[in-house]
Image (cartoon, rainbow, N blue to C red; front, side):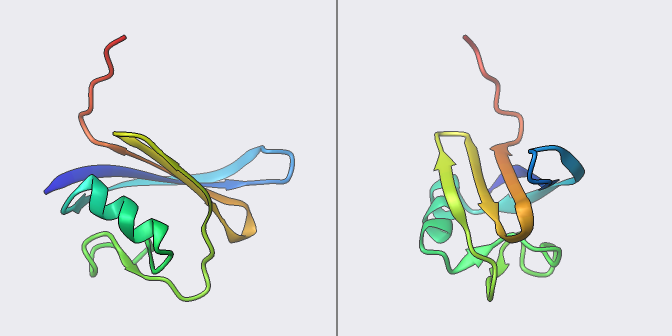
Length: 93
């Protein structure tokens, strides 16, 4: 299990952030999360505790999915952006 920090941003058309929330969830693996999001069958929701971070998606459509070994981002309906990264990941340049 790994912990992932999830940040949801509500963004206006001019890219101004009007609200945000962050929380930590546990997931089996980073690759499994990416696989589920690529299949567009799953997404993070407010019921994350009930479903251990991931719940079935009904009308939420995902776009612009981008990721690397420890960052992930996508956009959703209504100007919401979601950012994720693996907790305690240290970046050394």
